[in-house]
Amino acid sequence: MRVGPLDVSTVSDWDPGPGSLVSWHPSPAARAKALAAPVSTVPPSYIQARHLRSFTEQAARGRDHSRLLIASVDVDGRCDLRAMSYVINAHLRRHDTYRSWFEYRDADHIVRHTIADAADIEFVPTGHGERTSPQLREHIVATPGPLHWDCFSFGTIQRADGFTFYASIDHLHADGQFVGAGLMEFQTMYDALVTGAPPVALPPAGSYDDFCVRQRAYTSALTADSPEVAAWIGFAEANDGTFPAFPLPLGDRSLPCGGDLLGVTLLDREQTERFDAACAAAGARFVGGMFACIALAVHELTGEETYFGLTPRDTRSTDADFMTQGWYTGLIPITVPAAAPSFGAAARAAQASFDSGADLARVPFERVVELAPSLVRPRPLFSLVNFFDAQVSPLSVLTKMFEGLHVGARSDGRVTYPLNTMVGRFDETAVAVLFPDNPVARESVTRYLAAVRSVCVHVADGEPAAAPGDSPALRRQQAC
Image (cartoon, rainbow, N blue to C red):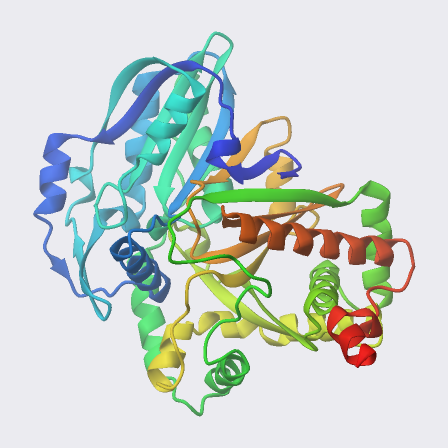
């Protein structure tokens, strides 16, 4: 799925082309310092703890787990390996998240170890010679898992006309912001060094450790009667005490399988413009209109009268946070009356749910479960909808920054903990779903994408969207 200059895909769909590989990993001295790092009193963030729990639980069942954010950018010329070594180590020492690793004792006891002196971190280059595209992909996804300190690696793929720089970072230490701010940090520093300029004086980075402490202070003050917690409880109770599941069958989850990405173009340029106008006419924005279409599509497929969904939101709140590498993602719960009498009514309701729920992203669901023990922590393959909208900030700013470049944001292709629907808008609108690669899930996702596309096209063309009376469930009721 392309969103302007950004290619969003799984690594298996990426063809970097053959080239000479150089990768950066810890020096023996740095690895020894990390392993000897003392215990820190700083807790993991809630989303880090969720990631470590789900990774460990899935591994115990013999299943793989999606964990890597793989970002890449193509650069002209021959890579200056000395300059790149400086850039990589400056980045690692600048952001304190890279100084930590975690000891997983059990689901409720996760201990952080932290390297005291950032200068002890040193990554060194290793040449691997010529590699084919499959060999490159295999090397990149072999980055160690989140229970290892060095769950992040970097590399260059040199060709005759230029090179590709990549970063393969466990989500434990990164979110989508890295694709923009992180790559720009690398490019700005590298460009300065190779032109003979001194290292760029970047603004001071904030501290992810500080965020983790602030988060625990905020959540420890919450009670079951706090309005934000009560809202989450109501949402969860409507979904069997946890996050909503994908509405269609996904096959036998006890059987191991990989992941795959299936995508379609929802709307061309003209249809996207008309869809946006329909959203505005309904008193909604693009996100509200798209959630309305998903809700109407699910209603058409299942007959469910209420759609429940989740969408991620960046929870950075201070100037320092926006300069900080880390995982700041929270979730907004979405509720849409899928049996609404019109697209406009559904879009207004979806937009209101999105806007009113934005602050709930600051409240990790695991904290809600602590306060309401009848609820259940998120189960694998809960349903998530992620938006990549290049017509609004921050992605609109990034697409201008990366104009003329080829930038990639990729998952490792393993089965994700959430089942992720990704909606991208630049000139056209596209959607892709990362799902367990088995026949049942593939059929379900194919039907789901077709239904969402049908509703979106109807809205763009000014036709009635999926009518409540036209759902399979209601047709069965009418036949009785």
